Image (cartoon, rainbow, N blue to C red; front, side, top):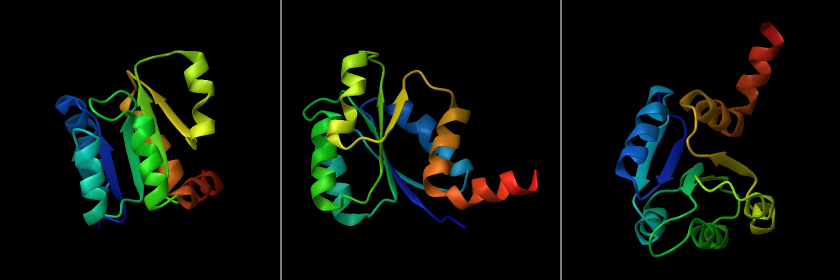
Length: 131
């Protein structure tokens, strides 16, 4: 049973496919977009429980998309991905409402753990209690 919906936004089709496949293995419903305009159009149809968003996209940056998402629904958590390791930019993400950051390249296991900790925090507590 697919309990949570995740929107993946990245201009690289291979990255979108990789993330989609990995998250579907964890029983998440996944939809994807290649850019900001497509992502915002999807948000009119689908209310995701989480958005995984690339920082550098053509047309609209990830931060610009995040700003629009916050206006539509400030309760949707956003994981920002980037291959650019500029510490000043990373440290300033909190000012833009970003709580979660995933550097590229990333390990799929780390992505799954991060998503689970955001969407299934009770499962983590349950596992910790009984292991």
